Length: 64
Image (tube, rainbow, N blue to C red; front, side, top):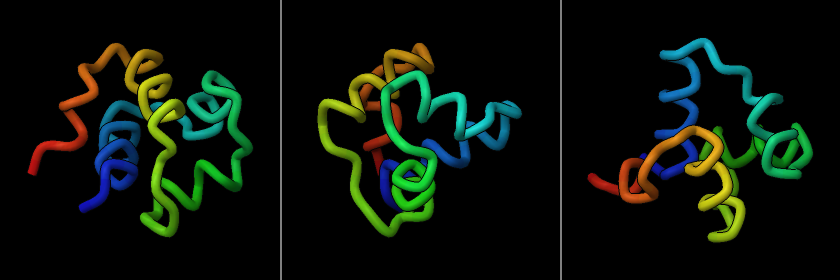
């Protein structure tokens, strides 16, 4: 499971819209959708912004 897929699971479990996260970190909804579907990888800067927006430690979504 990619970090993006783990973020998607986290968002779904908490009822957070992916569009909210995309807007919060300055990313298009379509790019966020591709990342959460595992089609693309997060750029490190956007990943760190996403973790900050969600209040999570960056290691949270990269652990196996």
